[in-house]
Length: 432
Image (cartoon, rainbow, N blue to C red; front, top):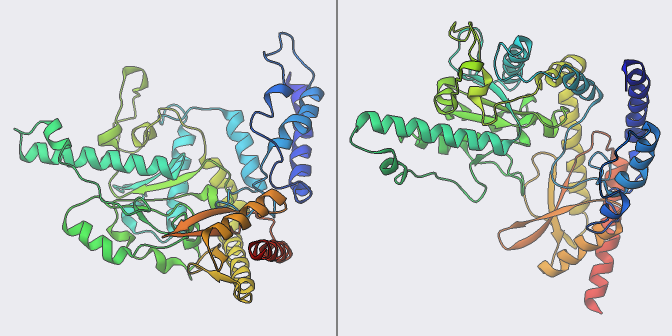
């Protein structure tokens, strides 16, 4: 494929993507395939000779799409949102085309510097304390990780390194092994201090946890993977109160801020806490500016060495949608969640199982866990909408998450009517 064909095929792919997203409502949200469906449909080995682009595209619809769960369907109410927008998709195309591996400033200065500035932009949108911003001379700053899990692991490793070195300095006779076997990490059944837990979107009280961590000189990491996006709205910012006690904070713009995966935003108060744990300086990565104090080498802030030009997605989305556009997106999802909550509360056979704060509603039929397991099975077998469950204490609960940027009140109404009808079937079957 030369540049001329790429221009033609690239435009065709943009049309395919636009057609896919515009017509996604007409596709079954959940695939009707069995494990292993794909292998018999494709050759056992790669072709020796090039094949036509048209053949590849035709096989997309015949082989790939039947096995796709359509996360951007307005009938997808499972897990949490995976964000997407046209500005972000365009930026990702450019990221792939530039193709730099931004492990150091010198590897591509714009890749590093735009990330530093975009993380400051985003931090200011959240009204993070000044200590978390890089600015021109700050000790903290932000970095884009691949996922919240990755950010949590980075924080854990940085905390371990920091306390180990502190104890070694205070007691040189202690070996690293002796220190390591004494270290303790405190966590709840939701993992770390969490704002918007995965199961039911509950919130830890940072104003209680934070002072204890500060008094005991413990590293406090806050994970707000889903809900963090909502803190750009003034009416939700109070849920972040207490972040000033944290050493690190993370949320995923790729969940709810219209930036497609992967883009997990992490901030630290002291960048040296990360570089102290992950610094890697082989001679082939050294460059003349690295000790100037003016730049960041992000390979020292993460587990992988390589990194993509992901800040382009933030830059395009922030500029083309604006803070007000992003706020409107968040508020619409929250409003639709409250609409679904209201519908559930109007039916006495159902119950709401957790406070609805963001775009997630946890609900169930009043009755046994087996009853609700049967309801969920019927819902997902019907493939008109898609839900996943959680356990809240000893109860099997259905999660209804507002996910797609294309979802409207009509889709929520349809989903509820469908759930209610299947609930009637389950209750009828139980009586029989």
